[in-house]
Length: 266
Image (cartoon, rainbow, N blue to C red; front, side):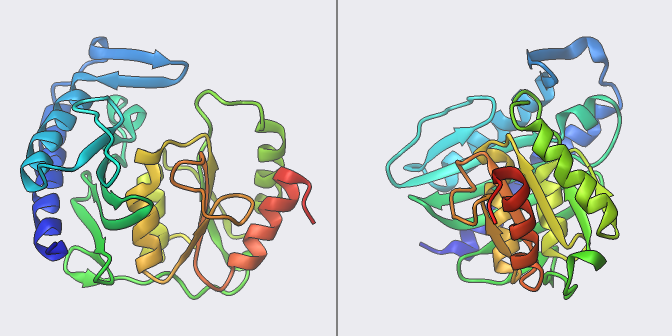
């Protein structure tokens, strides 16, 4: 399999979907919103972008399955699967805010082969393959060299529906507000992750996430020299619903803080 060639096709597909969404935003109105669940929205833009992606990626790898947020063409295979979020940051999009991103990963079983995140509002393409480093457009990127949490800028996100762990989660926010350079919440996990990859953020953590939110961005972080885990320090972060992504220098300190607060783990 020629990963570079396939990745080029993925980037073209991501651009097509992202540019269509950008052009459509000028005439988007809130009466076109559908509610999937509390604080969880979808529109014809999400659905059309996903259809564009499924069509293009299906041509690139006809035998691969799809795990897609809006369910277009969903058919999970035992081998290759595309994991797609056509519009990560829908709430931002429908309110005329940024960022919002197209997120695409190709996985073979539990191994990620390709990750592409197109942050459409800034027209920034983050990508990596299992045979390459991480890139922003044509330039290689690396995670930051911040060496302690006290000096870190941290990104997070809020759960949309699972509030069962909100009390300890707020405790983590309290800790980082007091012991870091600050917290940011952009509203797009895919964007948060690639911002860790290029050093704009030093760390990101969130729970209540889906595979399409994190698969591509987490892979790009790793290819940029960062470290990714679940809250317990394990590797169940694509399908496990929780994620920590950091540079390599603060990972141990940052992860131990999350584990201690969220799971009372020393």
